Length: 632
Image (cartoon, rainbow, N blue to C red; front, side):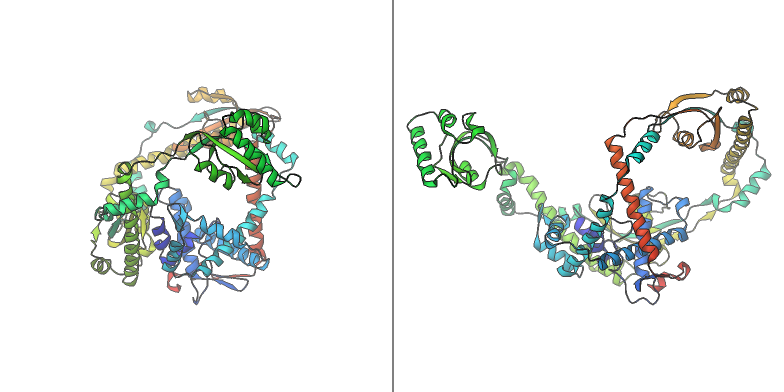
């Protein structure tokens, strides 16, 4: 319901329209529409600059998507700033080179395709239909003319032409399909043996605990915490203060009466006398009128249809057309059919096929829901529409005020008679109240809020709510005394020792297996555990640990004897894998797998095209450590 708000204010006003017209590339959507005038560009591609502002917004988008992918926070393995920033800049360079190539090669989309693209956008629809007024208003609100917006959509369409053209021409040879099928259907016979040092047998001294604590101070800190000030706008709150008159509800009911009317169907029969170059139209009309006279005089319609109708399909069934709905017949025929009463016979009706007589045998549907039964829903619908307009305007005004006075939310709240609220303390991983939403925590810990101390852009939450936040108070991470975390340190040390000792024993056991000194069964006796005999397994078998399954299919085929491998599982456990046989299956590849293979090939070829365009472009990059927010 708040789609329009999302398009208008998320990431500041101009950024909303960019999200609206973003195309399905990894980062496309901000390049070449924002920025300009920066002293130091992030990169230059064939003489065209990629601004620091463009880079900064693309990077923020990328981090946000990563965080959403992992449930609200980016794992440590993905959080290297230099790696992520390099990936973003590489992508922007490739996409800029792609756009330049497409423009030089004169890829275009026609006016018809452009019009269809715009009409299909939900952001410009009212009650499911494209609304020109909404279209104009949306564009005006972000400072875009229809011409500029349509030029951007043409660019999007031309890029999709290029992208779809490459993907659609991907193919896989029969030999490759057969090889893929053999590999995909391959089964492997494996056994496994797990080993883990008993944690209860390990002792940890006080000196070890102290040394580990001093060597890893950050691991035992309390997390950094924040409190934020926020202004919340809620569609439901606004709706409660809206009063809708009875007259407005009745007017909406009449305006959308078709919505509350079930589709009407008519069971009809017809008699057709065809006309063409060889048959005089007037003669056909005389003939159909003569037939009508016989029906009026009392002869049976179905019998005359069987005898005289020149529609061979329906004539065999007494002229029956079965059940007919609106849109099933040509307009002239339909108009005449739906104007008839039950059992009524039409006058002759002319269509491109000839002259018809139509009779209605049954009428179903067409029932209208009563006003009282839909009154409540209509009132809520009107309130929702009015509330959307109000919240849209409030968000726009609040966004402008928060941007113009970025060091406080209070002036904006006072001008709009809104309340500034303050959250409880929360950290990056959890919070209560408004901070229970991972999007709020992610934004609160962003550089914009945490380091620059600015008001945020609008954030759309669930349940049709929009939020603006700023930092209220920051509590840095603090070291906890050893006395308070001693047990935690002990657990960490034991876990570490379990992993190290299990790995050492497992590595030695793997060496013994490979040398033939011991068998898997010998080790099972030594470790007082059992060998797991999995038999022949498939690649996607659900009753085998996925890590073991993946490793077993990466092991070389046993030429003579057995093949062994080992790896560490979670919790420090080490597993040994024995591969004794590989069986190939010559079954044909299923169509779904063929489609997936073609899709993967198309994606790979498209990415290769992007890489090629990026590699051959003349690119000058600014070192990442020289790109800072101060340049924006």
